[in-house]
Length: 301
Ligand SMILES: Nc1nc2c(ncn2[C@@H]2O[C@H](COP(=O)(O)OP(=O)(O)OP(=O)(O)O)[C@@H](O)[C@H]2O)c(=O)[nH]1
Ligand SMILES: [Mg+2]
Image (cartoon, rainbow, N blue to C red):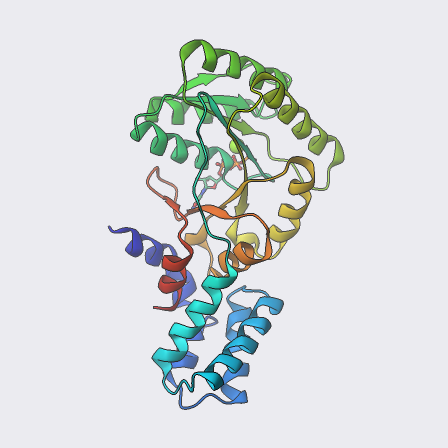
C-alpha cells in the first residue's frame, strides 16, 4: 500500500463517520453563503478540529473566496486545504546527528509509547542504524518484557533494570552501553504518567538532566505520544509535558481508531511543536512520517 493510501486507510473511520460531513457539505455545494460556511464550520468542529481553528479557517475561507471569486466545490476544497496547511507546523523529521543521539519518549498511560518505540526502532534499524532501547519504564513489571519483544523483532539492543529501579539509572547505563558499543541512537521508553502529577513530572526532568550531563551537545529528541482518540485533552497534555521537558515533536497514535482525525490538524496548528509521526495501526509498519499536505489531501479526498 502506498503512503497516501495508508493515511487514507488510517482515516477510514473519520471519513466514514456520519458526523464528518465536510465532504457532504461540499458535495451539495451551490454557492458560498453564510449557510454553507456555517455548515462547514460545524462539520470541522465535529471532526475535532477545535472550535477556534474551525472559526478562523472559515473566516479566512469567506474572505479568500470573495477575493478570488471561487465558484465551485473543487476550488473551495483546494482553498480549504491550503488554509489548513498554512496553519500546520512543518515537519522536518528527526534530528539525529550525533553518535549516539537520544530519543526520549513520554506521555500519559496507555497512549502507545512502547509500541511507537518498537515501530521507530524498526524504521531506524531498517535504515542501517544501530539502535539501543532503554527500558526506563521500571514501574510496570511487564513493560521491559514488552520492549524486549520489539527489540528482538527489529534487532535493537536493550538495557533494562529490575522492576522498581530508578529510571534515570537505566538511562545512565543505556548511554554508557551505547557509547561503548558505538550505537547510533538510544531510544528511551518511560512509564506512563499523568501530566498533572508533579513528582512524576519531576522524575522526567531528572532523566533529562542525566542525558544532558552524559551527552552534552548530543542530538536529543523529546517526543510526546498522544492518543488521537482522547481528542482535545491531548492539547492539555502537551502543554504540561512541554513545561517539564521541552518537547521537540509529537507522535499521534491510534488515528485508525477514531472518527475524529481532525485532531491531527488541531494539534499540529495549536502547539508550537510539530507532529512528527502518526500511528495508524498496531504493527511495525503502521507508523507514518507525518506530512501535513498529504494528510490534509487525504482528509478531504
Ligand atoms: N489501533 C492502534 N493501536 C495502537 C496504536 N499504537 C499503539 N496501539 C495499541 O495501544 C495499546 C497500548 O500501547 P502501549 O505501547 O503499550 O502504550 P504505552 O503508552 O507504552 O502504555 P504504558 O506503558 O502502560 O503507559 C497496545 O494495545 C497497542 O497495540 C495505533 O497507532 N493504532
Ligand atoms: Mg509502555
